[in-house]
Image (cartoon, rainbow, N blue to C red; front, side, top):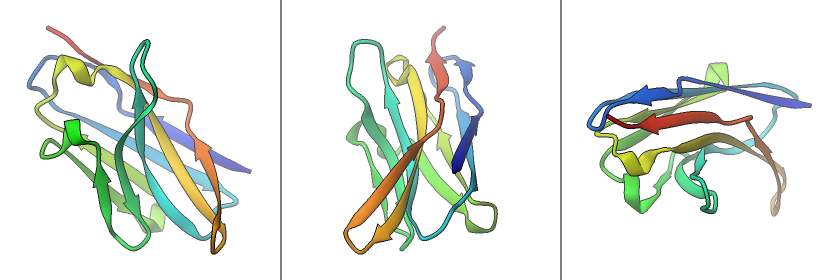
Length: 120
């Protein structure tokens, strides 16, 4: 059993900043990657940022240069620092944990989601 608990969402004005955190607990072993995805109303879920166990980072094109991702391995947490927020960043943000089962088999786990609203 794996649990992901997200925190840090809320309402912020355009140009502002927010920091999201996600803490993983339970049967965690062989983490392949941790990251964040988001889903706006009427749109598909999309990649925001992912940090692999090897340290590589992938960002969605719309957030490059504005968002950063970091991980505390000792605490199994991943954080997303969001700067220069825009109204189009408004969405529900989901934490993702990917565990490696075998060399080519993975299990994905998702948090419950946290709302981020960027509005004046």
